[in-house]
Image (spheres, rainbow, N blue to C red):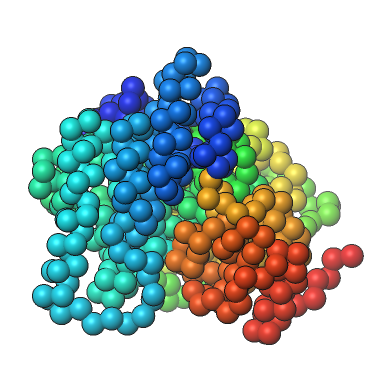
Length: 556
């Protein structure tokens, strides 16, 4: 696969960018002050294949702890680079840079206070003064990194843009890009170039567009800095892996990305396996054909307007899980059964198109089924349909022969890359997998692409040293109680850094603010503060009910 050419950036002993392998990262969840616990996590991460480890540094004591952590790791024979994660407190960054290999700063809160999400009028003079403040506060860290040969990650998050950016650009990918460029200009002023960017969001569409827009801007400027990819607050389990593969995998197939992290609400070492699978899968594919204009259909589609799940089966007389359509493939005879419609046969209506695009001229409904290089071929195929003026519904039909763990990564990446670009009316997963597995994964992919919501959307952070409660147990508990609410987005955040801003477009938020205390949000507005943890779950449910979003579960 051809990657976007970037400059080489050293993070300790690890080289990122240029022709170096795509690097794998994760972040500890232990309190950074607990030196031994943090060392234990980092060593376990390294043993699992993690190449760069990040720790949270919220104050001076955590900065000092990094000195002990770094020395302890070296004594144990571990050379894995250490990255300090900084929010709100530049003083901690200035101290910890002495001990770590890279400092991650969030442009939304390194200089600016927490966003108030209020309309603030900035004239050109006031705006320029705000930019000058960035230079004054950020320049000392840049100069220190320049002297010590340390790297900086300018890590923009969709949900924590400053009021200045929000009021000029809105909560948009364009605002995310400008937020990064403001800080980059300070770096370049001092000829500092050991920079890595990230443009994270929990919304895969925003995340993909932000990185693509950043790359376009960087290319126009002639800047070739490496990129760190990640879908923030992806959640846990299959959903977290699906969302991460859609966002990260789509960009890797575009040749974008030099280092990645799959952020899961799980133990950090469990993030490494999906990273490895993503890299291994995308390295075998190519993605050279550019995206084309999204198809605007003039003829009504027989499929679900938000995307259909079609189950591919080998015989008709079996129990079929609830879905939108069934595709029966038996020898040379294939049929498609839509809800409440007739069966469509290939010699009349249904055509399976592989690498021979001209077959599309013979059908009214197309199953697009290339056997290799599917995203690249898909883009070419939809460009062909546009040029030929063939206004036809298309179901993406990709078959796999791999383990279920690899299926999650492969299907989410390939279907996701096309669906997020607006190509296709739905998807059919082929291969010898249980129908329930195909159904569940297909609906998860549609939801991860922000096309069709069939279950509750959980936006939960992976946890870090700032987390104020057991995030994994709490997230699972809330999932069990509220997982039957399609269309409702619930954010579960371990600390105030990840709320309210990081929740971005959640409907309801559950945020740790103090030990044993929870704040509840509606959107970005806090509506209840300092709730005892013991009653917070029920108060969240009461809040959902009060806003008319609750339905009773039908499960027994």
